[in-house]
Length: 377
Image (cartoon, rainbow, N blue to C red):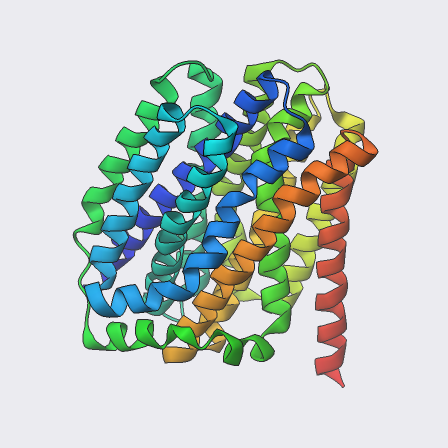
């Protein structure tokens, strides 16, 4: 049952990651080609995290009534329908509504997959298992913009391919087996307010990662276009950010299992912020590729370490409450990132985006340092 549930969790996060990874750059590039401003693109992108925020508190009730497996499958099917709706109702006004409901369906896959992963990862190899989970998430994220760079943004093809990939991903979800303990834990996940004071720095890390994630997914291809890099190269910048992270998550997982989590977390935040500040100086040169890869690895690594820390510190109902709190903070951060990323580019030019994200990660580094010194007293 353990192996089946871990496979199902990876399947769920693959569906979530691919839908997010494809939808953000695809719709952003379509809107940019129609003359939409970065601010409007950011606002439209923000509707997904709004959907996550609205629906996440309702997931435990749905799971209690129908079971986690059935709810996950329904959410994946809804994602297929909604991806096709983007093309059927090809107007930005409709996309605000569709992205809201898309966020609702994807939040379900996000919460359930993380509940399965942290609930069934043992202490000895938790870092490595979470790293595998993060790598799968990153690869699914990276597959979306890679697809866009190959087939372009015109016509039905990207939407149809996206729907088919998600349909294939539904199959492993049917393998999950739920036990009484899991059901009780999932039903306990409503206690988010109870959990927040227990791990404020972890939740801040999730918030920062979500800001980074949403801003780069929705606006990094647009950032590339501002440097006249072309559509394919601009989409591949996002792919490099994500795919490099998927390969290099395994060393981070090894570090998690060997060293203090706060030290690894601090290192990831500082390196990510430094690479983001360096990015404007290396754009259009070959150096931009390693800088982007390292920024993606450490930027996403902040979330990998946070998730492993959650599993190490909490168990049972507290663990699932933490998973739900992570989802809510991710939704808030993604909402902030989508909007603030657009504002930063509108107010300060293209380089406002990486500088804005660097400040976010420096804030994380400061919070982790303060917490570490506080614990040392």
